[in-house]
Length: 298
Image 1 (tube, helix red, strand yellow):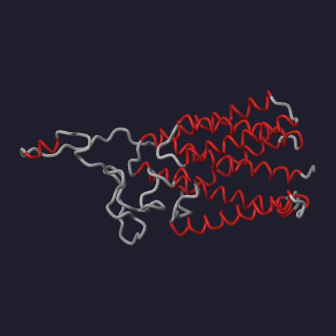
Image 2 (cartoon, rainbow, N blue to C red):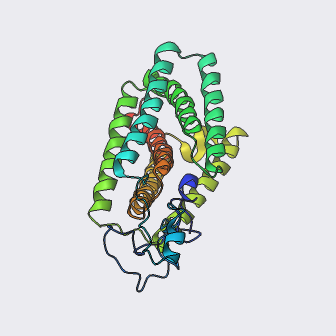
Image 3 (tube, one colour):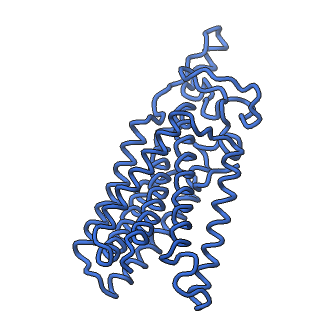
């Protein structure tokens, strides 16, 4: 089962040609966990374990003369500090873009068009990065910048209609993220392949239903937003969307943790930051919509 997040389903965060192999033997120095009873662990052990001769071209020659092989170089592996730093850079770019868009672009039809254009450019950059074999910081930061412009204009629109909604949405996003991390670290949620499979099925079904709902709204079949109305049904859909975002976060946390444990390359921290940013943007937008519904000032 691959991750819900396309940037985590590639090399560096996927160790069984699919979803992460849980409880597989970690790299040297990592926590000792076994593979017994784990059908998802990759055959062959740590995918980041390198050939002991790969870092030393003279090791094989020395072995032929009876010299023991040298241990591989262990530098250049991703750490939590790397993930935090790259995430701060990416999210900081989003915030900067949003602040500038809010300050410089008054609410108007022009700003609406710019928001849509920025969202499309961000989407294209995200797709390009998602299908690349290696992380590209320029693409990731470019995505963050355009996403920030989109969020800035949308947030200003919501604030004009529901004063304080963006601030409440930010607090709500932080609360959901903190609660999800707490639940994950406490072990109350066990991220397994079955858990991922069920969650992804629900998420895909949700996106499909929302796409159909959007088409019905566009063609006037579903008035007042359909499932995205400002009534109780819209609130239920919004809460479900936020729960799906929290589910994405648990997959992100698990795969980041596994990447660190198994010695993922340092540059993979950019993918971690990219994936977390996309998930947090999802939660923020849904939280913004939910705050507007509960404000009741249509």
